[in-house]
Amino acid sequence: MKTFETRGPVDAVRNYVVKRTTELADFIDRVKQGRYIVIFAPRQTGKKQFAAYMQLEEATEGYYVVFDHRKNPTSRTETETLNDFTIRSYVIPVVQEPPS
Image (cartoon, rainbow, N blue to C red):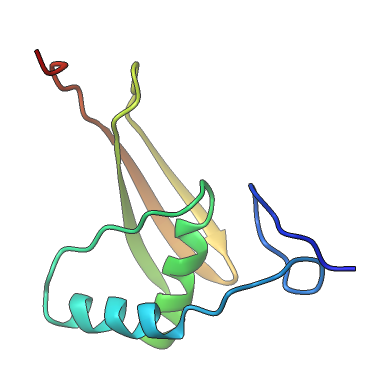
């Protein structure tokens, strides 16, 4: 019996999956035009989407940048391999004054 997953990776065998082919095509078009993009998704899904994009573009490595807006952000750099793709991640802290 399939269920909805609310966090972590989604497994198409165990979970309901909404295919996002239109969004993926728009994402690829924007990147090819040199435009900035922002992906809003649950934690740990961005790198999988990035690996799927890299596969479409026949790239073997790429750079993944995250702007961390949490209360006490810390910067970090890591390199990992996901489905034979090397992803270099950079977490950049963003500290903003609260609005008055």
